[in-house]
Picture (tube, rainbow, N blue to C red):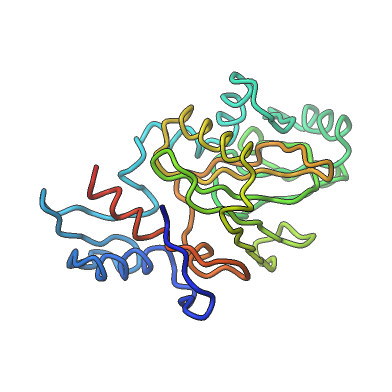
Length: 252
């Protein structure tokens, strides 16, 4: 189970690689940077291991590639009958306009991408002209409350709410509100574990969009989630997830 940290002892918002490096030092793993803030080595009883959070050795390469493809992720979610967002992969402007006309307001984002880079919220067909088809997936815009459930080796270890405000631009203001374990939703915990099992992911963050009536859809599945907001949230309990991540790698 991840360790809860008191608010008064929360660390500064270090990047994920730096958090892992610091945790490795605390565990006596003698870390050494190979590529600063990206890849470092640790010494374990079975030999030297290489830590690159962006390509975690906890997850099979095929599994990580599946969830990096946002369209393929949606297709697999559909095949399992899970709560999905209406989506399309238009091949041309005509198909894009038809999807927009059907849903009124949509989110357009790279088929393969990370974070909030190049994500657009569109309600006018004039905004569809400069999109490169079919490199962008279209999804119906669904307003709600975004919740992230972090799974490590078959257990939910942290939950928080993401507040972005109205913008989906890369410079949007972000707040992350961490939840105490007794506030975690049991149904979403079970769903997050099921999704991790379907994609064969030992580490994953499952994002849900929770609607006003408390129903939800699956917003995203991430195989390399960042750690800094778990260690130092805007409010709520800080959770050390870097240490159990490293321990899982050593055990593996």
